[in-house]
Image 1 (cartoon, rainbow, N blue to C red):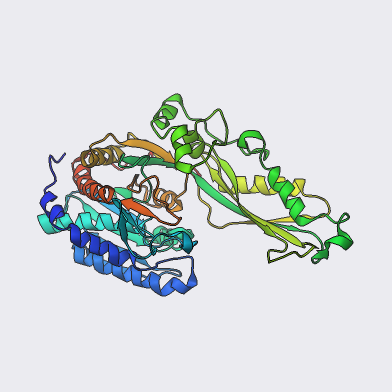
Image 2: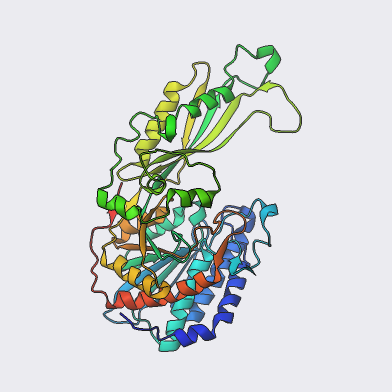
Length: 470
C-alpha cells in the first residue's frame, strides 16, 4: 500500500492539459451505429493511438477490423510485476433527440460543477482518465508499478462482434493477470463502486403477418385478424401481475442468491432512491424483491419498440398487413440466451391467433450473465485504491446491464475482471445531456493511480473462480 501518491504535485499542475484533452477527444463524433460517422471513428482511433504514444506507452497502433478499428498499446518494462489489461471503448451513442441537449453534444461545457458532452461518462471520459493516470506516473516516476496492455474498441455500442473474434484469435498477445474496465456507474455520486455481476441479454424482433396487403378497414374490418391487435395480445400475454414473466420455463434455471449475497446488495440504493432518481410515482416489478434485486439478480423481459400500420399525418383507415415489435430479455445465472430465445419464441407462436402468423428473429448481440466474487484479491486491491482516493468505503454491487465483452475476456483470457466505474448514477448515458462531475473525474484519476500500486503490492494469483455462466 502506498501512503501518498508520488504524482500528486504533477496532477495538480496539469489539470488544464487534462481539460484540453477532454475537449479534443469529445469533439470527435464517434457514433459507431451511423454509417456517416465512419470517418470520425477512424479519426478517434488515430487520436487515441497518438495520445497513448504521447503518454509514454509503446507499440501504440490502430488495428483494422471488418468494422471500426481497435487501438492497442503497451508498457512492459516492469520485470516480475503483474500485467494488467485495460479495456474501454471510444464509440458513443447517437445524440437524438438533439433538441433536448442544453449545449451542443460534441462540445465540452461545464455547468455547476459538472462536465457535459456525449461520451464524457460512456466511455471516452473514463478511458482518457486511465491514459492520463498512466502518463502522470510515467512522466513523474519514469516507470509504472505494473505492466500494462491497453485495448480500446469502437464497436461496444453495436455489439463488439469484431473485438470478440480478435480476442479469441489473439489471446496469447493479450494475456494478462487481471483486466480492468471502467465502463460502469457508481451507485451514488462519489461513492466508489465495483460491479461484480452483469446480466446477460438476448434480443428478439417479432413480425406478425396477417393479410397479403393492407386492407380497407371498412370493407374488411370484423373478419380479419388485425396484426396490430394480435401483436398487442401477444405482448400483453408475456407478463402477468407485478411484472412476472408468463413464458413457461422462463425461471427454471434462475439461481436464487444466498442471504449473504442479498445482504451485500442491500448496501445499494433504496427503493425510494430509485424512485427519486427515475422520477416515477411508483416502482413496478416483483414485490418480494427489492428494487436493487429486481435490477440485478432477477431476469426481465421488456418491450423496446412497437410499430405497424399508418404513421403519417391525418387518418388512413387500414388493417395493416404486418405489425412489429422488439423485445430484450436480461438474464441471470444460470440462464442461457439460446434457451430463453427458444422459450419466448415458442410461447409467441403457440399463442398466435390462427388467422395470423408470427415470425421471430434472434438478435445476434446476445451475451451470457457474468459474476465474480468480491473477495477476489484483485477486487480487494481495487477497493482499497478507490477508498484511498474517495475517502469512503467501496460498495460491491451487481449491474442490471450487460457488457458482452466481459464474458469473452473471462473465457478467452482466463483472468479476473475488475469493473471499476466512475460515471455518476445520473450521468444520462445514452441520453441527452450526458455528464460527469469535475470532482468525480479528478478523484477517479487519483484512484486509477493508486490502483496500479495496490495491484503491484497485492500477492494475487490468477485464480479460476471468475464464473462464465453459459
